[in-house]
Image 1 (cartoon, rainbow, N blue to C red):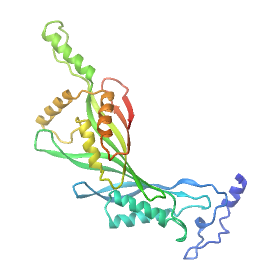
Image 2 (image 1 turned 135 degrees about the horizontal axis):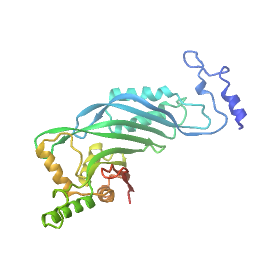
Image 3 (image 1 turned 90 degrees about the vertical axis):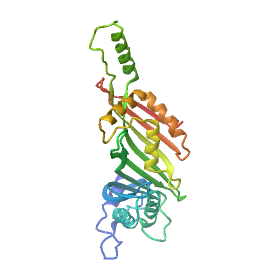
Image 4 (image 1 turned 60 degrees about the horizontal axis):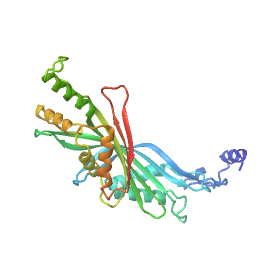
Length: 307
């Protein structure tokens, strides 16, 4: 079909023959004649407060941005966008967010966004929820604790086989001490003590910086994998996570912990690979590691994925 024909068909707004149950023109239900399907069509940035179920069984509410899509067949003009919002709100009134919640919402997208009940289910549906996930973090040595927040994206995708595949993306902040800088600092201190140099005052500080790993993992919705599961794996791989509340004894413990774990981005990449590859619940994963260098004006970055 030519662009001219497409434009003519698109502009037949006033000659709509399909009405809704109130008698208003239902242009969206008009058949499409050009046969071009659209893999994903829907809405983004729909804000909604959702209750998320934690691993310990507790429930917490989060301000969430939702993105919702379905596959659009080539003979369809469009989708009823408001149904995305209504479905998500309806399910959120009845259930807390967990993997089954996402599975159920995606199935309703495939069912309820059809124009007519006699049609086959829509071939594919998609849901993404972006929010900040809080977890209580115990201080390293003192009896204090604070809230650690993780920026999360939870994506669900469902196809004609009815299976739901989940993808969790999580940002994890940690401290990285440069091994090269640490080695040279200790070399200088030893040289100063032995009288080989009189430069400085005998104390050298290795450069370290706040760092981030953004990890994406793919898993089945019914295998028990959660946000807290991924956080625990990242803490195992990278123990120098930034702290939410510290007293002096915790600060000293953090300095010791950094000294025990000097890391280039290369070290972090391989630590991640060792831990994430070993977890059989993870079907696939990838990560971006970024050290916001305190020595350089540029960042050190590495990308790695499941082997």
